[in-house]
Length: 329
Ligand SMILES: Nc1ncnc2c1ncn2[C@@H]1O[C@H](COP(=O)(O)OP(=O)(O)OP(=O)(O)O)[C@@H](O)[C@H]1O
Ligand SMILES: [Mg+2]
Image 1 (cartoon, rainbow, N blue to C red):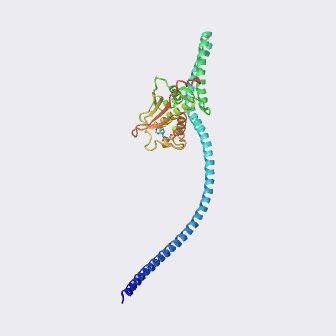
Image 2 (tube, helix red, strand yellow):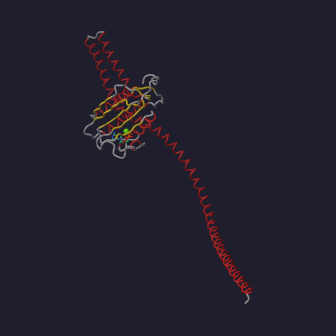
Image 3 (cartoon, protein in one colour):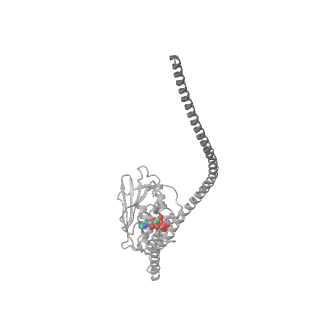
């Protein structure tokens, strides 16, 4: 073989090898492309199915949204009804308290009525005995008149309390309102041998408040303490008021069993009661909470060891120096 031929053969061999290489590469590409194609097909099928599912979900969603709209309308309507019912219940709750108070007040009225009978009896006796002088008669009748005024005051106090409370606020003396609430409850508490100790701030703090509503707050707390003390050995209620910076702090403590652990928040819920049917509506504290909050105040239960009584703390903002307009409380 000549050198030229040998070189030609070598070149052809090299070219063959390159060709084979290329063919292999092409075959590889073809295989890959086939794989891609299959994967794509798979994805397309999946996607189609997903689309179908999506369509179904969309339809279900529209259905649910329709239902939801109906439910929302229902809830709104029920909420409105509930609010109306609650307002009625608040007034009913107040009237129930009033009914309860009436028993005590009947006792309280007895006192001036007896005195009136006594003074009139004195005048009649004097007339019978022929010793009636204008002076003596006038004195006895004046005494009787004073007792009438006392009875009228008791009744008018009750009537103001029973009215749907007006929303007006004025600067009122907290201590005085505590005392007024107590005067309405006094008979009931004394009748149950419950001792009440007042320790009221000498600063005689004032708050911007609706006197009737605030009185209702204190009556509710006295009533709860009264109920908590039914079976207690020591029966005492301590009420304190104090000025702490720009707030008035009031605490109502009793020597009952206290609030069961874990219920400290729930007792403020409307209708939460541990009392027997007919003995409690569970509205007292929820009304109380609402009134205190309305007055920019807070009410909470202070932690005390189990069985050592309950303490409620009320904080109300002090009336500012400019808050004295609006007359007496
Ligand atoms: N001083 C207290 N000591 C112990 N438990 C109390 C005291 N005050 C309230 N509670 C608990 O909180 C519950 C809710 O009180 P709330 O005044 O709201 O309702 P109620 O007293 O049960 O019923 P209502 O006030 O309508 O007559 C009571 O049932 C009682 O379990
Ligand atoms: Mg109550």
